[in-house]
Amino acid sequence: MKALISVSDKTGVLEFAQGLHALGVSLLSTGGTAKLLVDAGLPVTEVADHTGFPEMLDGRVKTLHPKVHGGLLARRDLPAHMASLKEHGIDTIDLLVVNLYPFEATVAKPGCTLEDAIENIDIGGPAMVRSAAKNWQDVAVLTDASQYAGVLAELKAGAISKKTKFALSVAAFNRIANYDAAISNYLSAINEDGSHAAFSAQANSNMVKLQDLRYGENPHQAAAFYRDLYPAPGSLVSAKQLQGKELSYNNIADADAAWECVKSFDVPACVIVKHANPCGVAIAANSAEAYAKAFQTDPTSAFGGIIAFNTPVDGATAQAVSKQFVEVLMAPAFTPEALAVFQSKANVRVLEISLAGVKRDGKTAWERGQNSHDVKRVGSGLLIQTADNHELQRSDLKVVTKLAPTEQQLDDLLFAWKVAKFVKSNAIVFCKDGMTMGVGAGQMSRLDSARIASIKAGHANLSLAGTAVASDAFFPFRDGLDVVVDAGATCVVQPGGSMRDQEVIDAANERGVAMVFSGVRHFRH
Image (cartoon, rainbow, N blue to C red; front, side):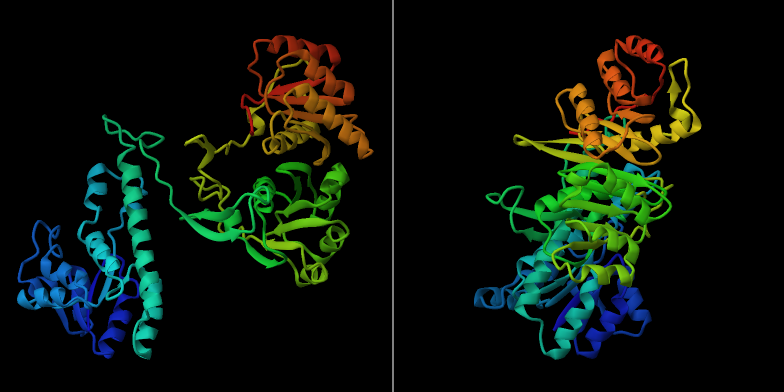
């Protein structure tokens, strides 16, 4: 049995090669990998000696040779193939261990030049991987260090199974597809002047299936759940389900809305979502208090909702949550007491999502645990945009009325604005003391959203007197402002930017309320 080993990332390869040698496997290798193995005392044949042709062009040509590809591609069950190998003095290669030049890591570095990128495009590696993967019934191809232990164990037990060889082949083709997609994405984003376009000329998306779902948004639709190839830390796809039924399509969509909202807060927070909209959001000193305030906003809609916390859930919080019907419960951690509470509610889906890897001050969206882009499917196409990751700061607010908001009102306005970002447009959010008091979402008219928010507050027996209001987009006329002020609002945050801004400002002054402009819109469709 003969193995060809040529890796860029040498993690674990020496130990694997030593295991192969102990089993009597002959070793072929190239360049730095060969040196590593030889220095460790392993008998290794250089590929140049094997092919009788030296490496050339600074190593660009070393494995592109019939003695390599013939040994990988020859079918052992075809006498004609084996006769050709014998005629030309070519030995079969039974095991290929290759990982590719680090193109993705290279282009991710600040200051990477086109020349750097080009030099890290592997040619020989992908060619060998494709050859071996195509001939998977006779050749096992390893493209990642995580595969070494399993393959070595099977070899020690006698042979690598057909099932494993096929799985290795699929993994190999997936790796090549991802590699080529990364190259295409990078190169097609380069403009004629050498600058990089925000969006590449060709968009190649690589996703990994996590699970098939029972059905989609409705029972007659099929569905599956995929994750990014390199998911951001603290994202929903990293969740560990601790108990409960299988997640449904709608569960996942709503859970993502709740999780993205709750993890945007720096203090203990609770978010309750129903049909992709927050129906209750609150911050407090602890998770139990935050839940009580969030639930109070709209108890009716909270029934059968999705609940997310950004701090660990303890027994007291779990006891409170267990009194209502909840579909999904999410938090960074759960105490043993909390988990014990839900053991009697076997259908409740409990998800643990670690926030340990999230850097609030990270330089990239990925480091901050956020999506860098959003994608929406349209007829035979995609709409791709940078994600709405804008975070409004106190210093960004522009007071446009004679009356300026108090410090407490500013706190409420910033809280309301943060919630409005996650409410479907048109969005109107009433808040007070770190708690949503009324939420109006997804209406064709901003006036209707304002009225619905007020109606919901009334149903929950909540007074809107002295509340702060956030509008995700500007008020096109003064009537929207009048509706929220009539309901009890005393301060408002909106983007501004309407041709009738002055009319609305005048109305605010007339009504004696404070208004600030954010300068940013948060449409969410």
